[in-house]
Amino acid sequence: MEILAEGQGAYLPPDPDGFRAWVRDNKPRTLVHKMMNEHEAIEKFVSDGDYVAYDCNYFQRGPSSLIREIIRQQKKDLWVCGKFTYVALALLVEGGCASRADIGFVGFGPWLSKAVAAGRLQTYEYSNVVMTYRLQAGAQGLPFIGVRSFGGTAGFSQSGAKLVKDPFSGKPVVLLPALNPDVSIIHVHQADVYGNARVFGTGISHVDCALASKRVIVSAEEIIETDEFRRDPARTSIPHFTVDAVVHAPFGAYPGTVQGRYASDVQHVVECFGGTMRGDLQPYLEKWVYSINSHDEMLEKRVGWKKLQELQRRETIREGYSI
Amino acid sequence: MTPATHFAEREHLICTVSRVIEEEKSYWVGGGGEPLYSILLAQRLYASGVQYMTEDGVIAPQSMMPWDPLMTMVASRAGYRALQWGTMNTAGNFAQLGYVDVGILNTLQVDRYGNINSTVLGEYEGGQGRRFGGPGGADTIAAQCWRTILMTDQQKRKFPERVDFISSPGFLDGPGAREANGLPPGTGPWRVFTPWAMFGYEEKSCELMLMAISPFVTVDMVLAEMSFEPKIAPTIETLDPPMEEELEIIRTQLDTDGQTTGRGQWIEKRDGKYVFAETQGRE
Image (cartoon, rainbow over all chains, first blue to last red; front, side):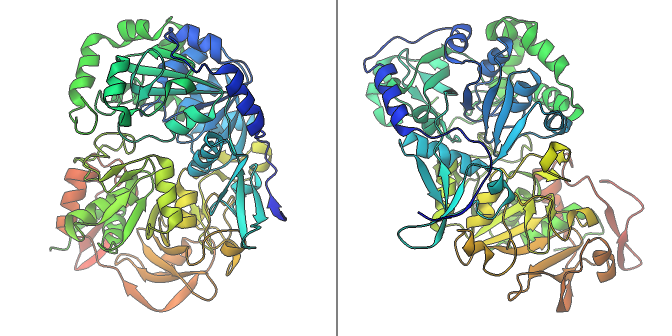
């Protein structure tokens, strides 16, 4: 295949055979109890230097409690899949955890310019959909995927993409390297103890994240019986055999929203966003991460039941969310 | 409808774009802010059945008002009563298949060929430039929708001869460049709207072309707020001012706290003419 142009960005090299072998050797085929607390899940399945993907973001059905736990455990040199993310990357970089990111969209502000200028964050440029297509290829066990976008951009030059002559039509087409993250963290509405999981409403790439990743940590608003899945199998979003850990995390997306369950905490969102715009997130991290030991403790000591009830009340829409 | 006598320039921008939205076309609206307000306003006044999708795979919602500016995607109000819920690749696939006629986007910078920068002001290499969020979904919107509408402010720094970084493609280097880089033929930039002007593109050269101006500025004022001289259409039209009915919707249902439209200058009608206002802000 003739290569017409190629980006110069580093990328996680696709290895579909290696991934298959990983699945063969590491993913249990039977129903295995995978419940654990957030500390254990992050300690066991996120390692320094890992490529990490999360679905959605810190404000919208993201695995916010797990992101805070990664920071609390001071994981290092993570390479972050920065699709559709606002402040989560900022928190991970300012918390000293992330040093590289593939960018689709990130919450900008002085924190970002400073981190890039100081060399604390190395960025590679993509777009949101380009990243979710890379995950799709990873979720299909393919080495690459062709797309009809991205070509000719400056992002292309700073990426792992290539422009080639399509061997079938002879026309130029962009190829993206498949992405198989070391670990994905995904927040869902419901899961059982084995990792079967349901997401209601829209998402960014939760199914592909689960299928494409070597390790998958699911945090769930609610743990339900496996029989519930058997009664309505079409509503299973993620199958158990892709999942390595299930964490029961009510309000796990806090301060973000979970559709049909609770609204975002606007005051908290503004506080967090303000930190990125001021370029100083240390007070935020101190208050919401370092000074407490767990998600439960944060809810109890920093948020309070009254606020949580208010957030539930404010989420008035139920249609489509099976509640 | 009644022409308004006191309004923000960004309100005017939203009203102008809402009037070019056609019921028979399908739309992909990027992020929140002005692009979304334009289509929501059109749904309420000019094209009640017009369908749009967003990056998280919400297809044809009847979003709940008042609009929540913080929660534009993966949120129940924004996706309310949609016809389908999918994921980001649902949106990407529909656009790649040719189902999406028009994309509407905000941009930090746009150049002569309609290229879009949302990544960095200044040099990318070396990391000393001022960084922004990246293209998000805009790269796919700009590559694959049949037409792209851009919205931005009329400021010299927003219209450089060449953007500092092409985050999302316009016509790239000119005629034929999109196809040579693997983008689908027959797609590309269609209009750029600012509070002061409407631009199209000259078909042959693919270059930005001034087509109309707002009633409170002159052609020279528009050109003074650009870093390059665009093509100029043979006849320059004058855009209509906002209508009271449009402003009522923007202020009570869409941008209720003025977060988006409150910035920028205000316009008033004085002695029968639209001029920059002495009083800023909603009365």
